Figure 1 (cartoon, rainbow, N blue to C red):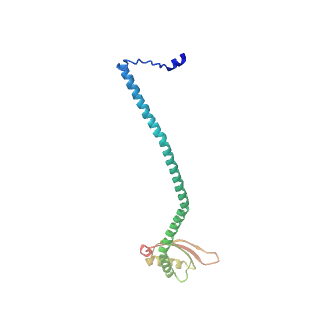
Figure 2: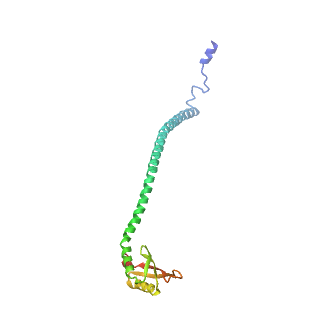
Figure 3: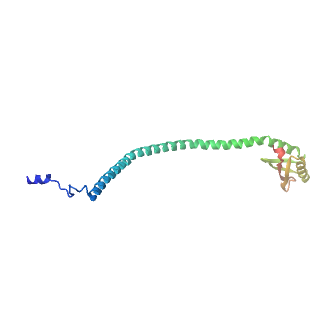
Length: 188
């Protein structure tokens, strides 16, 4: 019985009577109660942080799924956008060609109308308002007359004879290249 009697005794190192009235006792009581409140508040903050972790994880998972869905949509529409851009490019080329269609035939008709009788054209290329004309003739005078006719017409500016050469030694034909620019009033 001796042991059970000892176990029931409480050991208290602080004196019970009169200690609360002293400055040290009041200070110690205040520190213990304040630290108790600080520990409780800290535990509440830790619990809130721990529980908010689940909410933040769920939001993170939702955002990752949304990003993956948007990536899939972008990848699916990438080919469509590429095709759309290609079509836009083709349409702009077509519209430029259509706008030039009226100009090129009219200018070509004028070029042909200024040809001397013994001169014939082998190739005419057109780029916006510039013409490159290639042809053949037996006479240098026909080439000169053609250049003068183009200059005098007022439809063409910057008419230049780029080259002139003999076709072969046996043939008496001269091959020539002329470049000409359509005047602004004719190009519209």
